[in-house]
Image (cartoon, rainbow, N blue to C red; front, top):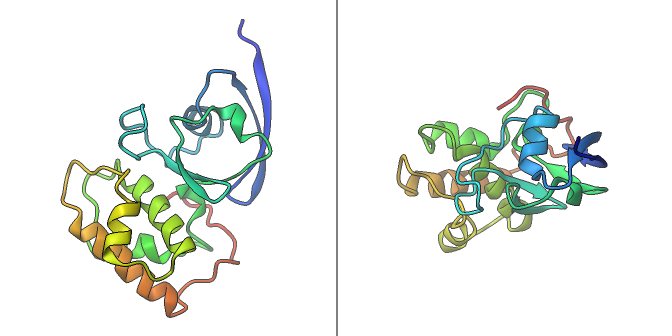
Length: 172
């Protein structure tokens, strides 16, 4: 029997404890132990970005992070981006701008885009493309994704979002 390790962390603003094996990735722990299935496993080797989550405010490929590295850390997943049943502007703009197709890559894009807008509320098109370069979409082009992030940035600058509201409980 494999020894399991206790990890205590904060996920989407809530304290969370879980047990994991030493070799288990953060993506596996999120999906299998905590049932947060928004982050998707695409490539499993950090090339596609479908599993992107924020770890201490920095977007990371959760398939490349060991779950034990989350000890004491603050994690934000796609499930924590919406607030009080309202989609975050980046989510709303992806939806309105048809910036998604099959949806496998979408959670990673949304988390990476939010991380960018948290750091830089007025990114240029080049900055958006550079920041999202680690996320791949095999269904559509990238123009609609970039346009959705630009529109979300505009709405956020106009004050269309209350970051202090409670995280939504619905999966988006």
